[in-house]
Image (cartoon, rainbow, N blue to C red):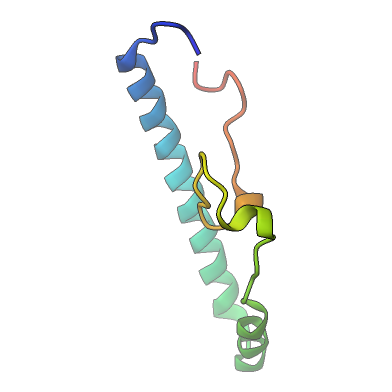
Length: 84
C-alpha cells in the first residue's frame, strides 16, 4: 500500500504466498483421497450426489482477488505478519 512499493519485495511475498497456497491445496487433495480410500461404494455414490455446489449469486461473477479459487468460503489467507 506504499506509494512506491519495492516490486522485488512484492514479488517475493507473492511467491511465498503462492507456495503456501499450493501446499494447502495439496493437503486438501491428500485429505480427500485418504477419506475416499476408506469409503464404501455406497458412501462414495451418496457423496457424489451431494458434490454439486451452487455458489450464492454475489460470488458467481465477483471481480477482484482471489478470483473464485475453488470455493471462496474455504480460502485461507495468511496470518498478518507471518511472512515478515
